[in-house]
Length: 293
Image (cartoon, rainbow, N blue to C red; front, side, top):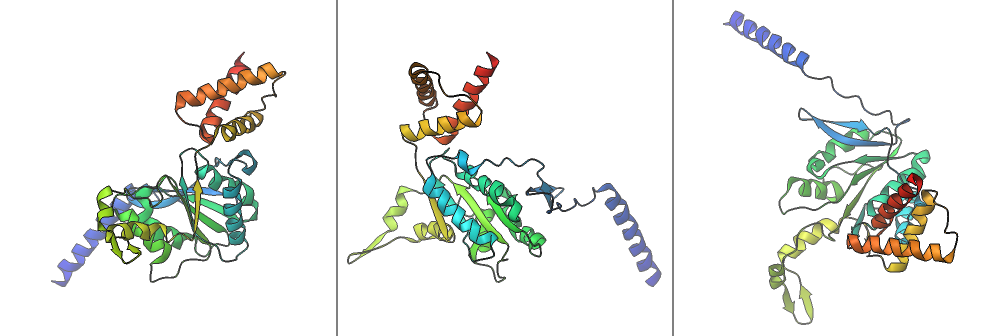
């Protein structure tokens, strides 16, 4: 019986050796002294950090009409890289107003001081504990960036994010914060029927359990930063900033300036939106067409 067991073990080890030879080698961790950003990726079910050679990080000065939002996130980020207490951040509100760009601008501004960015897709949020374990002993300060988050009730990523923010038996690492963006304040769909669960006790209003559950995720972020639709003046200011970014010279005359303004406004009408993103898209189209001529 002993000989048969030894033969079986030897055979199993031989099979495992052949299978391991077919599998790709584990990806090496990024060289964080040289790399400032990475993405969490999966290969054959195994997660790893993939370095981003050329991060898309805009300058903070390129973002206009969101001065208060810039001040709030900059203050929090400066506290974080200095080793002082700082909060996880949730940026919510109108689309195209600079939520994601503002997070990327923090990387550009503070990378030289040790700030690093790790982008994680919603489907991979269940791997947040593994990501934190990989970087917990590093001297750099890491922002885990989750862009455009929306959940359906009961999703695994929703629960994993809640635990990572404020619910694990293990303490959170001091060198990691989560910055997330969403078009929804509570990142979950809200239904009219849920309002029927609200109870009135005297003059007090008590939300129902469904509403309380949806609030429970967003309230785990210590800093909420809200973004609002651009007015016409804000939109035109953003157009001017992006045209300067693309090195388009100012109009030679009042007539030329009025023509450019009309063109920018017509572009926004066609898109059905006035925002920093639309201003950037117009500036790219305008600058490219001008150079082509």
